[in-house]
Image (cartoon, rainbow, N blue to C red; front, side, top):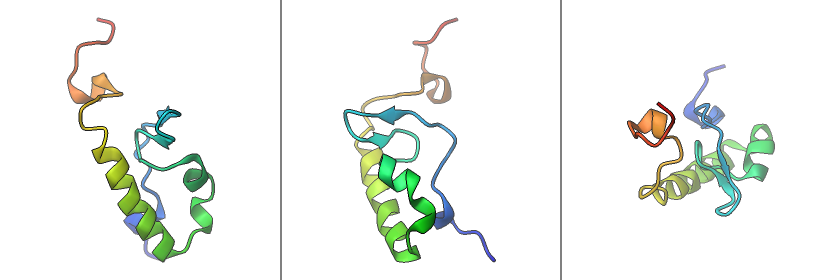
Length: 75
């Protein structure tokens, strides 16, 4: 079986934004994360499109300064 991007969009940076109701790392909702393995390929493709929109809406903010070159963390 070939692994594809649709198998999981998780990037290992799991920061759930409860105000926006999705993970700031992958862009999925809790439901999408929890039931990912049960969605069809077609459903996963749609979720991935929605994830991109969610993550694009974060362009003005940065949840993980250490990976973005920011300096707001402890020295």
